Amino acid sequence: MKHRTVKHRSEGFATVALPMLLWVGTLAAIAVIDLGAYLTAAARAQTLADAVALAAVSADIDGARAVSPIREADRVAVAGGGQLEACTCRVGTGRAVVTVSLPVPGIVLPTLGASRVAADAAATLVAPPT
Image (tube, rainbow, N blue to C red):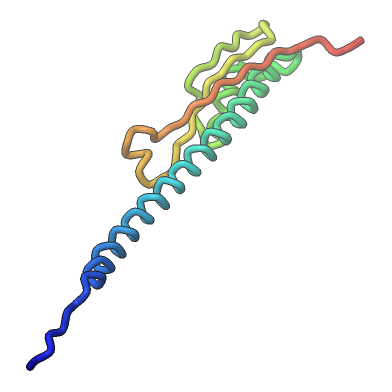
């Protein structure tokens, strides 16, 4: 009488489960990397927008008008690695409202259309306390 060897099905499960787990883990890592890149770019864009608004309004101070507020805003935006999208900053108003954008590094987000992130900021000159 011959003994039959019965193979267990658990060997096939490991063959299928391990590649699936690796695939899901890779997708999760890509999502975390992209989310982190987007949030970092958004924070940098807000910081840059604040700096651009302050630069634009600073160019509007009496005696500092060697360059126009819009030009100064654009110079600071480019120096910060961004792009000035909009600037409502007229000479003599003491107010600047700007929008800047920065590129978003990442693996998947840029290909899905989220290649840039924008931020808005405003600054107003106020009289010094007396």
